[in-house]
Image (cartoon, rainbow, N blue to C red; front, side, top):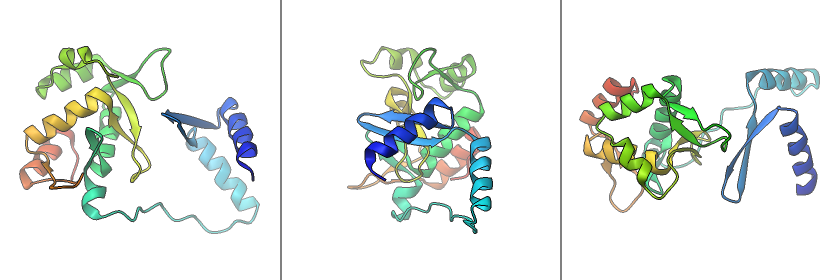
Length: 190
């Protein structure tokens, strides 16, 4: 299939609310709109005779980079993506009204929770950059928290010894104290 044909099909699926698109710079990342669409596609593949299930994506990056790393200036990897998922489950981030799908603000609960961690949200909002967004993680293929809030999360994690900056790499190691902190504060085993 040519790229232009794929673009036309993806646009039709987006208009029909079957896929959603995450725009990051000049790149567009498409994903299924939800479990209903996935179930329908799975059912169609069974009817079409495409037997067998597809194996789960497993990146071939080193264990250290995959576990936790810095993406530009915010936390990424499995730890960063798990934090994003946990924050969403706790309803701390909220979608920006009439904004980009991947832009976030904070709910009242989120502001209180981040404040309790010692984060100065007011100062973070005054920075001359985007406040918060979902940044697609290349290793996990799911988002982590990006922009100014993501940077603040990384700074707090390093300050509270939840991670140690790796030497000459983007990898972040987590000491046993950091693992306990992540489990206690967020319910995340690292």
